[in-house]
Length: 53
Image 1 (cartoon, rainbow, N blue to C red):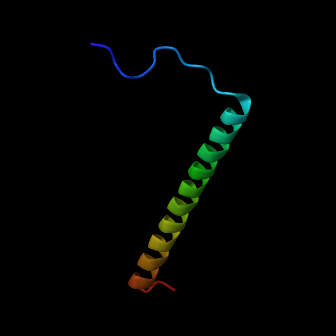
Image 2 (image 1 turned 45 degrees about the vertical axis):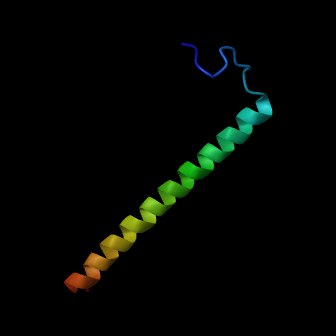
């Protein structure tokens, strides 16, 4: 049985590669920032809950 996907693919153009890389790095950076912010808020919340000065 043959698949619907074509068998030969053209390589991406340089502009497409740069655009895809920029999107990938932006998403990775935002994800890292959100994880860092969430961790800091969690630690700060626990600190407040425990009543540490």
